Image (cartoon, rainbow, N blue to C red; front, side, top):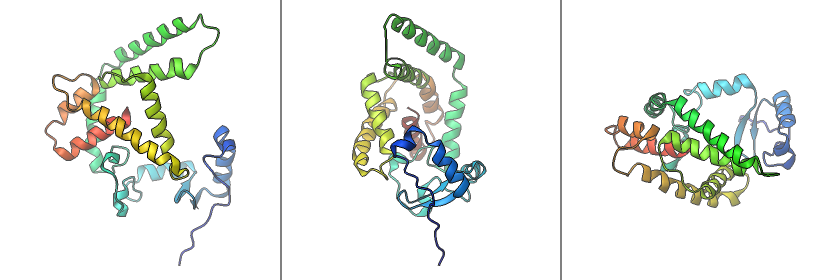
Length: 231
C-alpha cells in the first residue's frame, strides 16, 4: 500500500502570521516539501513554479472538473474555472471573442475619468479609506461597464463578494460555508436577471448572449455561471 507523505512544514492558510506574510512558509514548503499531501485541506500542495505550470496546463493528467473523479458538483459551480477541455472551449471562446469585440480603450478612459473624479472629491479630506472610497466603487463600476449591466448598490455588492471570497476557506472553517452558499444564491439571482431581460443587451454580456443564443441549454448554463464568476 502506498504511503501518502505528510507535510513536514506546518501550513495553516488562515494563521494570522501566514496571512500577514505568507512568503516564509511558502519558501519552506518549496525547499522541504514542494509536492506534499495536506491532511486538513485534504489536497495536494504544489508549490514549485514548474510543477504548478504543468498542473495548470496538462488537463489530461490533472482535472479542474471534480466530476472526472466521480464527484457530484453543484450545477452553479460549473463555470469556465471548473470545466476541462473540451467542455471549456466553447465557453472560453465565447467570452474571449466578446472581450475582443469591446472598445477597451473607451472602457479604460471611462475608468480613468471615474478614478480622477473620485480622487478630486477626496482630495480635500484629511483622511479616507482607499478600499471603501476608491478601489471598491471603481472596481464595481468598471466591471459593470465592461459587462454592460447596471451595477447593484455598492454596500450590497461588497458584502456578497466578501462573503463568497471568505467561504472559499470553508474546508478550514466550516462556519463560512452556509453564509457563502446564501451569498452565491443572491448573486446568482442577480446574474440570472441579466440573461432574462428583453431588448438589446449591451457590453460583453450582450455579445456573449448573441453568439451563444442557439448553442443549447448546457452551454447557456455554463455561460451564465461564468458571468457570475467574472462579476
